[in-house]
Image (cartoon, rainbow, N blue to C red; front, side, top):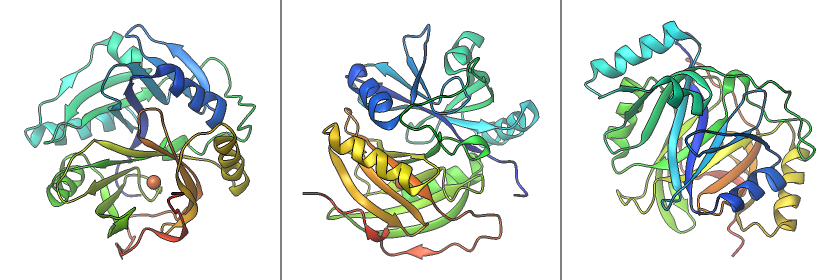
Amino acid sequence: MNRMPLWLEYLGFEVSDPAGWRRLLIDVIGLIPGSENPDGSLGFRMDDHAQRLFAIEGPRDDVCAIGLGTRNAEEFAVHLRRIEAAGVAVEMASSSEAGARHVAALARFRDPWGAPLELTYGAEIAATPFESKLQPAGFVTGPLGLGHLLFLVPDLEAASRFYCDVVGFKVSDVGSGPLHGVQVDATFLFGTPRHHSLALASIGGAMPRFGLHFEMHVPTVDDVGRAYDRALNAGVPISNTLGRHYDGVLSFYGKTPSGIDFEIGTDGVMVDDNWQTQHLTSWSAWGHHSPD
Ligand SMILES: [Fe+2]
């Protein structure tokens, strides 16, 4: 990658059922508890970082923080200058606010439609190693970040421009096609070799909610299969059965207690700055059926 990498560092959710989220993330997916933060948020770990997901109690049941990772203070400053030069209002968080996110520094800003973006560097490494009985091989994170988030935008073209020209991502692929009977247009954005860290989706400008799904990546197909079994055994509603996307990711989707889907995936192509953008006309090579 020629450019400065940018990845999904963490995600925060405002949830009406923190206990249900805790059960899903820990007892089904195999994350481990992080800390209870001074701002009331509950942290979860999926690697050596002190926190990758957090949940804070509230009525919105949606994504409340999209943490973007940069490599160091210098690159953080370069990203920040570009964002501010575009006229975006940026607020530097206090050290206690950055502490609740377990990063060295954090700058808050919003996209033109209000998405809660948090540019960061210096993720805190936990004092203890990541050990999960349910997912002993861990999750595929490191320089690729947490996984990905797909969220709705009212204007796909304008949003694609904002996330590339202002935030600093690049388009890997675009697509359009039906998903569970709804016409969806999407733009996939990368800032590391992972095919997408963010994906923007439009359903004709409607915005019934913001976050649609987030993905966590595991090393093997067996890890996906075992997570699928645990989800079925726990009665977690399945949104998409096992299937393989056109970017090569094999995955299934289930519902969080907030209605946002989670995706557990493996495999997938790696991209670089020479990647040729494709226009996909369907989302999956096989599977990913609605169970209904
Ligand atoms: Fe996905």
